[in-house]
Image (cartoon, rainbow, N blue to C red; front, side):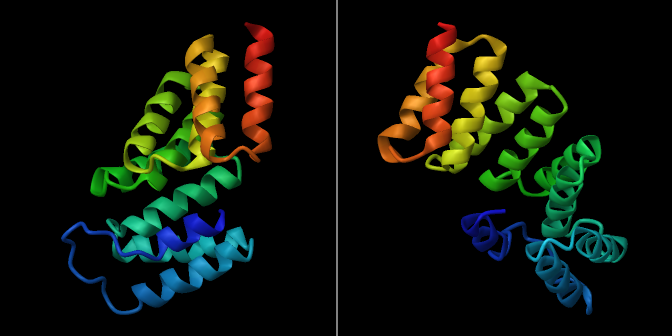
Length: 173
């Protein structure tokens, strides 16, 4: 997770949901601290604890999915993040992470759709542009991939991943 993702995670979701039961806030906060520190097992246990009491706690669903992705359980990741999106489909970060899980599963079209939705909500997120470009390249949509890489390089000319993706795509062309 990068700094901007962490900042966005601490923004409360506007879902109209009631306040979580007592203890849930602290368990989530503790889980988030463990997650940031790379203690994924501890974070997962706390997210599970929150979800046992409050199964629609959107941030816990999302971050539980991120932990699953980070530990190679991509189907579980896609399921948990998909549930978070069913509660709050207005988070570009959630769609981005779903795209990552789908990409890891080799589901290129689903990954591209998630990245596109993420960009509709979070248009300047560089990693999403790079990942979408990579998926499009892998699908053989080379012109679209080039457009993605060039789009992000306009605002982030220092982004090595975008230069690498653009070069690889142009080489294939």
